[in-house]
Image 1 (tube, helix red, strand yellow):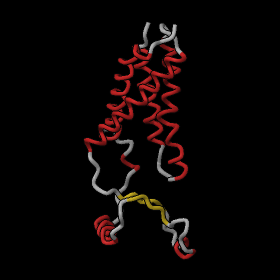
Image 2 (cartoon, rainbow, N blue to C red):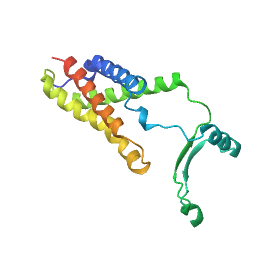
Image 3 (cartoon, rainbow, N blue to C red):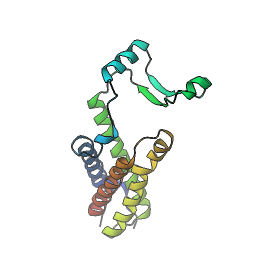
Length: 175
């Protein structure tokens, strides 16, 4: 017998909340993301100089694909993202929570199509865990390839998030 998506409201909410809490702990308490982000050498001077340049908010690549041959030989390559204003912690926390709720809703929707009511814990865990892995880890691959970001710890987070969501859905799956 198929599962009605409405019967999954509790695992959807609990999985989204649990993954949000795990994400918060991963980024604020655990040390594994700390080595990914380093301060600029002589940060005060660099920030002052960037401010003096009056660069508007936006995403920049250097050297840009239209840069001169001289600029391309300088050996200084990278990306810069300049924000219009400082990040709003409250807004970012809310949007992150909404993102995790959306992923949990999508996982519940997929599982409701494939898994019947009364499915075994292991079956629900495997399906939701696999779909969760794709959701939490799959989308970040282009960033690792194109923007050369350090992503190993984000993959680790994604696996943990998938396992958390899988466990919540498997435990609360309708009988």
